[in-house]
Amino acid sequence: MVTLQEKSVKFNQNIFVSHTGGNLSSDSGLMLVKEFMDALEFSELAEKKLQLPENRAYWQHENHTILEQLVLQLIAGYAADSSANILRHDPVFQTILGKESLASQSSISRFLDRFTEKNILQLQELNQVLIDKARLIRNTNEMIFDLDSTHSDTFGDQEQTDYNAHYQTYGYHPLVAFDGMTGDFLKAELRSGNQYTSKGVKEFMTPLFEHYEKVVPVTNILVRGDSGFATPELYELCEEHKSHYVIRMKNNRRLVQLAEQYVRIGDNHPWEKTEVHYHSISYQAQKWTQARRVCVRSTREGGELLFRHEFVVTTLSEDTSSELVFKTYAKRGTMENFIKEAKNGFFFDKTDSPHFIENHARMMFSVLAYNLVNFLRTTCFQQEWTGLQINTIRLRLLKVAGKLVRTGRSIYLKLSSHHVFQKEFYQAFHRIREIRCWI
Image 1: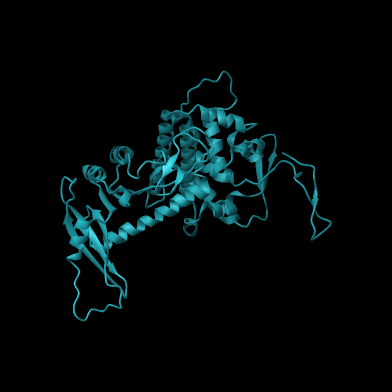
Image 2: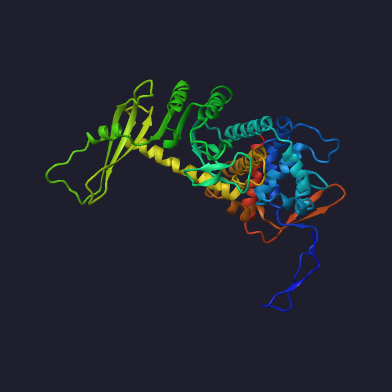
């Protein structure tokens, strides 16, 4: 979209600004993302996995190409569907998607209208295949399942929106799982706002266990979760699949009584100093089928009289000290950064649609976009860049001015000669070429 209106600037009256520069693009760095997606065979996998009900009499855009367009828009930072009305004529978007014109906002809306529960499972299958390819590149055989739930605001009378007492607002309450070692977004499930944290966790986790036992064998799996996941069905599921877990427990009277037995106070106790003690006890709750190891951390702040007790239930043996168990659990906090990245960078909590299933589909698009960038970051970037957030990646590598030049046989993408991060751009580009030999 071009405007003929010009604006003069106050600091120099000889300068005029207008959007009349021609067929340029500010997203030329997406060529790097597309090259990586092609190495993973994203388009072929999406076409194979995603089978929407086809009730269209005529169409211009295949389903998998609309999905790829939406994922690229999210990676580029365009959250609104209406952005497609301008981007559909962007030369870089047209070229990397191999189309003369991209899907418009109305085409995207009709695309979402055809989604069913079966298609959500297909998107999850697509995500799982991509994760397996990334794990093959990394050559890793250990995993940490970090479980959590989060909140997505809703606005208006959207399907299955409800009040959540913990967040004290209306919305959805998604259940999510990340790999704590790599940051990969393993799985996400959209739920009504009034669902408890651990509701449906067994059905949510079972496919992950089965997949990593049979399809992609993993040597060791550790499950971490906060007190919302302190439920016997999760313990038993982990034990059934011979996986360790480190899960925070809520305090109760019996646990506190057991912890207090380890508190020792002498006549010359140093009350002014902070104390931290670690213990391990055997404990069986009324609903448990067996006793389990519970690690205790007792903390008394300097100048206070009473200890504060914290509890973590685990299958790790006594060879692993209680202090190390708590340190292992504490690293779960990294997951909060993964969730923030998914929300702030990839619009995971975007709930623009009135229908629940459409919002679930949007959430899965964000999961795919997040993972593609995480794969690229952890497998193709130099070591110093593996911790970059998406906003920094966009600034350094994706938001690059470029112009397409077509000849009789070739297409040249000419990037800005003053791109500050040219060296890192081509390092990642060459790394992608190497990856093609492995998968």
